[in-house]
Length: 403
Image (cartoon, rainbow, N blue to C red; front, side, top):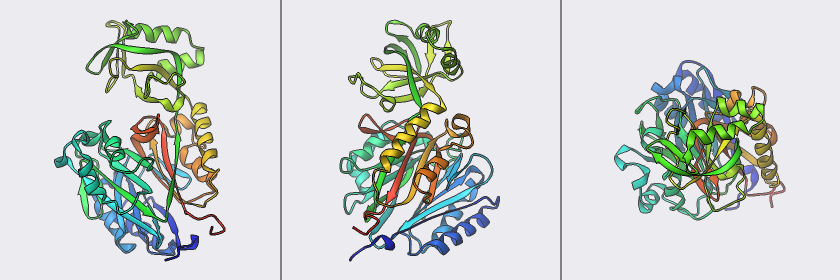
């Protein structure tokens, strides 16, 4: 079968009606009217206002499109086209298809245990790869699948270099409150996702927001989630030492939002922005000399304190988009995972992720979600990161002239 660019179709739709069923019917009708072919996949993202009825909404949209492979999730915020919706009810979906595209959904739940015990055969049995995947997207509940092993077990199950994107879903503040849907399976735990194969390509687009300040430091003493020693000295003392050497603007940023970056490759002395796993410092306890870091940092690891500012992030995303645009194959659509630490608070209302992705990639259909931690390539491996953007541009495998 010969497939041409005109055979491939992608569309997105969004509705902000408070009634979930009304919003789902509208989104499904919009997508069905726009698409030129029956889709292979539909991805649905609903704000937490729609959590109670997101399974019904996902099924309504799926049925309107001929029951393709379907994944639905709840999120604290929704990216749709050039807009980001961080408050108020929002339901959005993206559908993509064509005769050469194959898609399958998959699901894991709490009975499968945490990702640390998922084996390669188990993961492959859920993915069911019929050919080398072009993209794997993964959406996980942070309370039951929020392990650093999560991206690695998928990496081990597919050919090297397979794009992997997604992250931890947001919106639910306690276990059992996030909603994950894969076709007709509904979960409040574990993870769901999809596999794309065939006549489709995925170009990763990754932006980091952290800028390292101060010298690299070795973690020499930890206790649970507390970093007690850095370079053999009290951790809080080293934090104050770094603070004292900063310019006033940077000092204010680090004091108001203290962060550490854990070097993904401690042996690499030329670490850039993409070489760190960013973690928040929840508290600086000067009485004990320690730093409270959720998840801590392993003893012996190398860290640097990090500053997050909009200008650093804007430069990083601009460079990533420049690289993506070197490929002249048409962008059919975009899927994005934007960290909860970003949005208007970091980037401002007119320069947020959705607007820049949409404009720079020539206004393709775009869908994204706000994530507690995004899955992004760092130091050559997919990892759970923070404060970044992890997106993929879904492309036709053909040039604009059909070559």
